[in-house]
Image 1 (cartoon, rainbow, N blue to C red):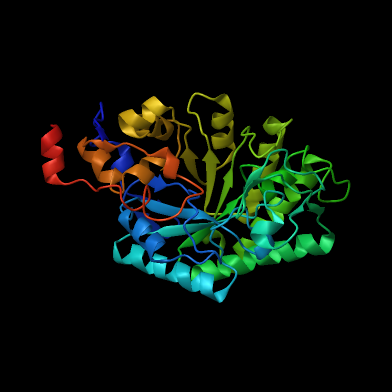
Image 2: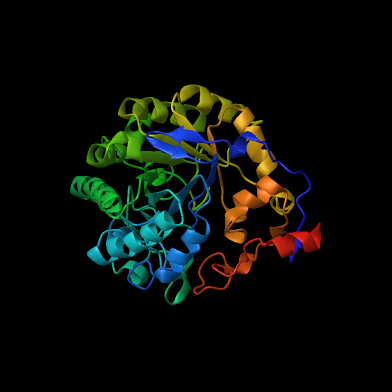
Length: 376
């Protein structure tokens, strides 16, 4: 089934080329990182993932899905990693397929922290403090209650920072243009940022300066490993998922950005960016570098134009690039559909996560002249 896009956006800045560091991007539409649970049981990307990403290579930039930098950081079953030779080789095959199709890619690095389970990773989760996730999570045996994580020692913190740097080196060796450090969505870095999950009284907690330290040190290690131009950082101010509660985002995030600025990462990626929110305007004013905005979309916006109108408003609010997620899932050729005003595929949400195989993954049809003519 298709939906007709109501407002063609041909000629929009969305389709104008731009620069990201040394990269020339053909358009300003970014495919957002999207967890899809299609790696094998050992976290190795296979041919199915190579097909999926190559289908979507017309995005100005693809940020590949959350990928773990070490075994203990795994969140759910069939999440890819990049800490073994086999995982790195699998990602190299994916990257080669996308390069052959003309695309450019960053890889998101994500450590789950307390969002993990021994039945999934084989390890007791590590977190800033021994505060369990308040909700069940997916494991190989189905939904299970979360376990209480072990509070990280100084040695755990230092080794995890080193693992992020090693994962970034592996990603570049696999052919990625860069990596995105995931500091959002209630996962490990966000757990350090939030006062309800970081109860520490040492230098890694307590004050805002202490709570931002882990994220800053991870970004520092990654930029030193692969170069700042190859590094992005994703944040989600005010997004309270996975049991994270932010009591002071209006103070926390300016402090975080001020601490990150001297490291000169290649971009900042703001999740659920709203062009009408004064908080977004403050973040934009505080960040002098490239900013990628990822909007929250209603079902109506997704069906009408996959977020194109909201994306144009974000560009008008001084975002440099706009990341869309579900639109790219359902439309492998989303850029061309938006450029031409062509119909959009309908998203099948039952196949988004915690399922496997090609259904709802690589079987969304690309646009053909015949299908377009049949609608218009």
